Image (cartoon, rainbow, N blue to C red):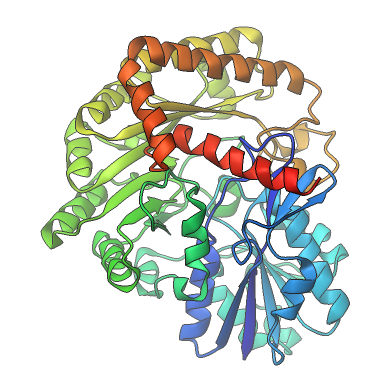
Length: 494
């Protein structure tokens, strides 16, 4: 069958190019493309963002980057028999829904399936918002991991009884929750992402990504899937049922070596939800890289649970094997709010490992969320104090996010006031307390820079130099560059 896979446009909130507009390469879509192709289907990828990443158009409070919907339609093969539209991120919902509607308006009889992203905290549980897609014409919503399920759906099209048997698939008439997850053995068996079908050069030429891009070429990497933790602000417990499943260390390094040979890529941004759950596996991965003498660098761009990194010896080994960046998530300085979040965090362990990262050349990031339900001024003061302490200990950068409720998260029902799902980003101006939280966030960022200048002046100089040469070791260096590019694109539309 002829199958089209579509990655939606990137959506930027025009009043905040710093926190919105983050570029994520669509790795789950690349896996779906690979499995469909391996099953013998003719696969076409249309990346509505990356095929024209420097072209922008205004849409209300948003900036839409990439192809127009008409151009997406023009790129559909004449013999296409089914279309998957990837719901990559919650903030891109405007585009995801817009593309679905455009296709169904032009081709009412063409089956359109919306594909869930289960491996990102920025995604959303489609079972919670399926009606949003049915309203604009989607025939099906596919939840759970899409690798093998996408093949099952394609091969069952036209047979309603068979479609009703596919777990994870839903329509206006039925919904079958996902019944399971891929095991380590199955993850090792599926083909590597089909990046040859994507406009890689366009991603690389932007010079900004989710992780700090320090080379001309990079690729994302999923070394495991899922997360065992029950954090109430996160969508992942809903999309992964607190199940963590690793790929084998050998299989991960095989992928690094494969794309090093195929595309000359030596920089990998690990986008796992929690890549270090197994300390033994991470060590094995490091030993495998060293055994093969691969000249690669890799960065834990999406973060990890710092307590799962056992000790300084693991940090030393990671650095030796090419690790150059690790993001961790204290979330808050308040023990009381951590309990409300159901998020454990060992500060002493984190401080000890951050200190070691400094010594071996691994850049570190600490992420915090503000405005969790029940948080008070005293709790935010504890976060302020923790940031200062971590800055003194040598953390390279911080990220401050104002809580927004993702469909599927435990706190989703506790919020109201947004008009569109794309407003559910980390600058939720619709929140009644946003002005207060936004002001606190800005003040803390300013003070972080002042503290860092006081405690580690050389790092500030180095970051300024990295910014000027566009060789980013931290997101703190890269984000202003991205914001500048997005602002210029916005100004051109006025």
